[in-house]
Image (cartoon, rainbow, N blue to C red; front, side):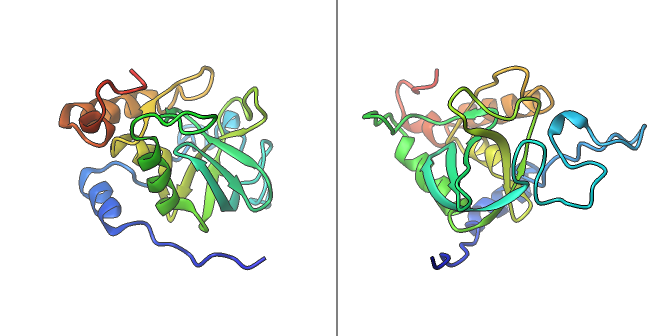
Amino acid sequence: MALRPRLAIPAAALLFAAGCGFGGPLVDHHDSETGDDAAETGGTEGTDDTSVSSCGPSEGVVEWVIDGDTVVLESGERIRYLLIDTTEITNGKDECWGQEAKEYNSELVLGQTVSLEYDVECADQYGRLLAYISVQGYEVNRLLVENGYACVLRIPPNGADHFAEYQNLENAARQDGIGMWGACDPVPCD
């Protein structure tokens, strides 16, 4: 099977993220006081193999974008983005801004090698791996919230470390009427 050509992150998204200080590189979960990596991230601490964590792959190529918050890797794993929720466009639903969220997600990750960072729980009740996704050093979950394509959805125990930051991103997008916050009435995730 031929790989799709690598898509670059849209320049506007990178400039917006760089100018606002959001959407930047993944947060380092390294504890500077103890020198230990956070065990709950599901990483591969203490090993030289960074291709697989205790939850699943640490990276992979996105073969299919299901919607704004779920993708399938070439290796077959279905990945559900942590701490966010986009409006529904599957199972007969077509909620406001759902197609736009899928298209934006596709522009960012389809055909790209992405990095996956896990949290406390590795998978959801549907068997999807739960992860923060990054591409070219930018966290896609964060970009989706920041640019008004996703709402914050925290399902404990996951998301504790990023929740306040994501809530601030959502509040700013709401206030500025960015994305679905300016296009949908009502916003489906309210």
